[in-house]
Image 1 (cartoon, protein in one colour):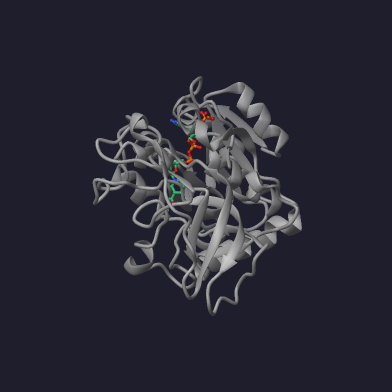
Image 2 (cartoon, helix red, strand yellow):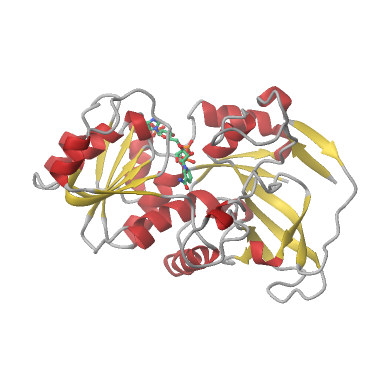
Length: 338
Ligand SMILES: NC(=O)c1ccc[n+]([C@@H]2O[C@H](COP(=O)([O-])OP(=O)(O)OC[C@H]3O[C@@H](n4cnc5c(N)ncnc54)[C@H](OP(=O)(O)O)[C@@H]3O)[C@@H](O)[C@H]2O)c1
């Protein structure tokens, strides 16, 4: 079987396809034939050796946390799945339920655990989950990280009621799932983007208010206007340093800012006086547990939510896929198929 490897000195030039013998599952393990993986910004950072404090290894790393595959064989004692079942890989192989802990956080796929970027992969039976039948393989591959992060931020951490106003930043993977989940839950959604064309695509998914942040860097103003001067109840902060100042101006008193990502550079960061003044809550988010994933899948099934797969590449064209992500050409998700 073949797998994607990346090693020091890192970078897209270091992505290699490597042959190795087919693995077989041990007790409690499953062998999965991968059908699709989706790209997350994290994978791009990982390939460049820039994820977290940097990988604690010189490599090779097998990238990709988010995969869809079919169970090919099971080891002794496996009861959760059987050959032929279609599954998604869990971002945290060891976070099944309850609150996060350091031990659970150290079980993320891609790094430190070898990821889903390979034709055949062995996982613990606890690290995969069955998925709704109506989704395509490409759509299933978008769920483990981006979708679950948006789900958790809104419905595990956020304290939202129908009619509340939420802000989604940009039209990448996390934000578009945030938009789709918000609309399914009866929330009012305001979305920002650098592109009017992408904003129109967001309108087609139900966005109530659209703001081009290139044309209007002070996007907190239309958020306040749209909420009668009160401010948003919830903001999904994927920009980080470059957007938090506007988020703090856009949030209502006592609102919730989910701290998720770091895609926006520049900006002045957090002014504690503003945070005190609006008494907002800020909550760091790091994906979610398998229990949360399964709750999310029940909602996706009930509401027939179709993940926005924008671009699909054969897995051997992984470099072109990463270049498309880096160029910000996508709306929603980019997927590789096997
Ligand atoms: N904490 C977690 O558990 C977790 C999980 C998943 C992702 N993340 C992080 O969340 C961030 C987004 O991830 P993703 O997978 O959704 O990335 P993505 O698909 O690459 O989307 C990035 C999008 O961000 C938007 N953007 C860039 N600069 C912006 C700005 N100044 N203001 C508003 N939007 C801006 C762009 O939207 P337009 O093209 O529309 O302008 C771009 O398409 C990344 O930092 C990622 O590492 C964290």
